[in-house]
Length: 222
Image (cartoon, rainbow, N blue to C red; front, side, top):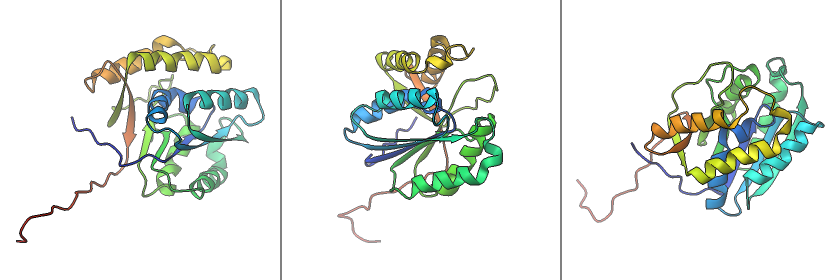
């Protein structure tokens, strides 16, 4: 198994169709990355939930999941479940985030996600962030659309426990959903951990990656 580390992490973009998508799919990664890169600039765009309790939950949750970051959160009020017919507005919103700066990392929904809102957003991401490292997070819900990830971020057990605690603390409106419980979150993390020689992990899907090779010095030309 090969480990690849980014040269730097000064700016991250987080994209979610619904409030809680980002934290459920990549909350552990956010905790680890923000603590490893103090002061990182984080811009989060969430397409639905604006003006509701869901927005309040999302703002508080992302602040907790991005400790020490320079965080900006934008929550729009597009209709939940109707993003496929709002494609142009979704694309425009993602383009607006893109114009705010050059991110070193973009986190968005997995391209394999079968939920219609997330699928629309996932399809737009590679056309807007063409030359950026993008990772698609996964969510275990009733759609049954999980696909084997291509990248993993191992999580220490205390980090996983912290992620689960923060999810339950900040997303009270979601706790009646069948998939929103500690067993679901820990179970998927345990499976992904076993697949990357760790106890727990979050899985991600990557697009095209270009490998750079440092020039060799001190050698005679051929």
